[in-house]
Length: 499
Ligand code: MV4
Image (tube, rainbow, N blue to C red; front, side, top):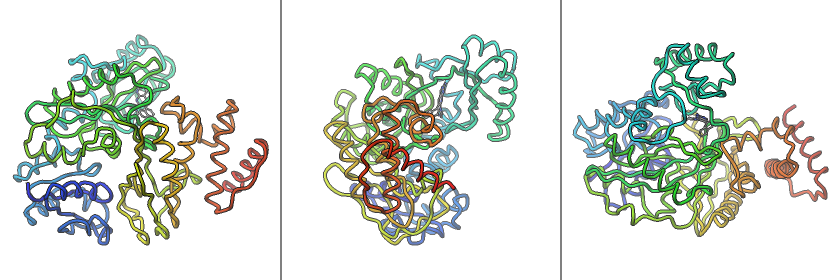
């Protein structure tokens, strides 16, 4: 492998090119009209223009990307994440063009792409599933019987859905029929596939995912877990490794399940198996992501591996150079996603120019980004500016380092989620590790805040919100002597922002 075309943009394109370079492999960037001056284009050895700004006409255009690879003599394509990374047809077409696809086969992607097919595979392997139907269910009366057996509340999910799309909670038998009909017709119109399945609704789950690596010789290992429970509307906010709640025994059990699934679909490359963890620490398989994930750096920190290099070696046909027994977790790592979004305006994307842009440095700090001071955030793509990753000997050091790094990060010109992430780092529920997927909704939603009856949590949230707003207003720290004063200040400020 002498030259890799990276079929992506932004931080991940640069991330992939860095590893390629270290391996002595040349790189080719592709870029749309909106990315003429983007850093991934400047970083690459060569760059090919592939079309207008909308991704449907550029980064998602299979033929243009394969032509770009053929024209530049690239012998491999790395898809990054998002865009074409989980597109089975793309994976197949790249290989049919005699180019190495750095990722799994189209067949592996198809096997894991359908939630129902993935569940059936998992069931056969004895991988735990949330109680429910592993098969598509169409008949309403049959579905009702299943729902009654599982017990309410239940969740109806679309097989072709994802990221929370096509999910419906049903609280009682009386609502069931109507909700089921709605779920089916919604799935049909959104995904042109009306198949749905039913699961018991896990009320307060944690989201744990296992990173796997699988070579083309039947060897597979897991690289332990990442916990991604802190998310907002299915968008991850904080990711960490290891999880603060898993025991070594559970970690190994989940890891073995993930490896079994990878082997069952003849997986090759880096992949992630997602699980839900319920209140009683039972884990259930959810789905598999057949790509390198945004949050892979936390796994790199705790294992000392470079996942992109591993992907490249696997794609070249090499065997994994280590066994499961040789892998171990060292230290703790956290990642926050820095988005150009305004937390004070319902996280609406904020576009504009990065007037000031200074990234943090120092021990245990990594910034994966693709911006420099003075650059504009394009409106056409994901508003993520950067990933800020920290590493420490333990969780508390990783947290202190993250707070320090956030404070050292200076961005002006666009609103960002940096201060919001600092609030999360300071929150008692986050610090103690006692949180679930409802963390953001529970503690940072203004409506919920008003009703919050846990005084300590309320105070912490309010303090954090005030600090956020102070920073936004550029004011200096007021000296506030008691919590009532803080709360009334907070109410005043909220009103002035909303009204
Ligand atoms: C669930 C669940 C509760 N019970 N399944 C959301 C996205 C999709 N991949 C799976 N999801 C969920 N499935 C059962 N049976 C709760 C969620 C869920 C969730 C899962 C992981 C991370 C964040 C989440 C936020 C809301 C709901």
